[in-house]
Length: 112
Length: 229
Image (tube, rainbow over all chains, first blue to last red; front, side, top):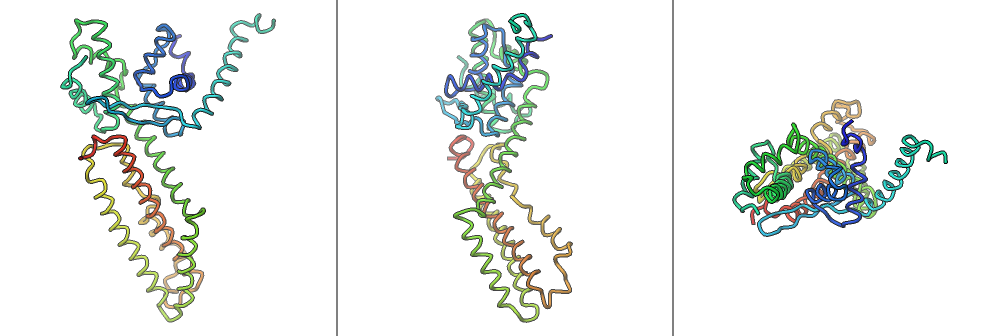
């Protein structure tokens, strides 16, 4: 099984966490930070990242602002008020999910 | 560091790969330029073109297609939600006061128009006036966005209204609510329903105007280079 398929469904909580910890971020920065934190184990593909960010923007979870840097323009994402609430919920769900996985992967630990 | 000319060439690269919208191009060009610079830093022998090919391959077989499609879908969905929210704002405080006053005035007018054909003629004139208002408003809206030099998905929702009045009129006049035989002496219920319907169209135009104004303000703020200064 490809590692990326294991991460599917976890991308949104990952992005929420990144935005919570770093305030505002731009797309490329998110991909690089995830790579750095996971020591290259997890790579977010551009084809998955941007559609999800646009979806989160539509849902009112994130808001955007653009900034000029010389001649270059950059689009930043940050959490909205609703996004901050959503992050707390997503983190709780993530923890519960990881615990459930632990029960399956390591039943002895779970029973003990 | 890539040069300004190379940076600008990335916009042409996006266009070549069917990304014609400036708001999507801005994000992709920023991503591509950052990734290219990173690749060239890791391997100084790599040319700009080679690094670009390398980075573009990372977008997968579909390239930018999914990004554009999702952006279109999401902008349209958000636009529809905002327009309906603005439409319904005319039925909550404080704007409901204006809606109620307008409808009350129309009903009072209906009570006053008792002669043959008077109600029918009044409603036809009213309907025509709303139509003319809509046409004039669309001309004004086009002027508002005249300074937009580059196409954007972000502003594409300005074209569609809350209620498609033509479609609504067609349904209405082919339904049993509008009885042509009644035009001479129109019943008050029929008058009330038709005037309510015209009022709804008028409110949908107002809601669309509110939406377009706000969209224009946000678009200039977010993408100033897409507009002529």
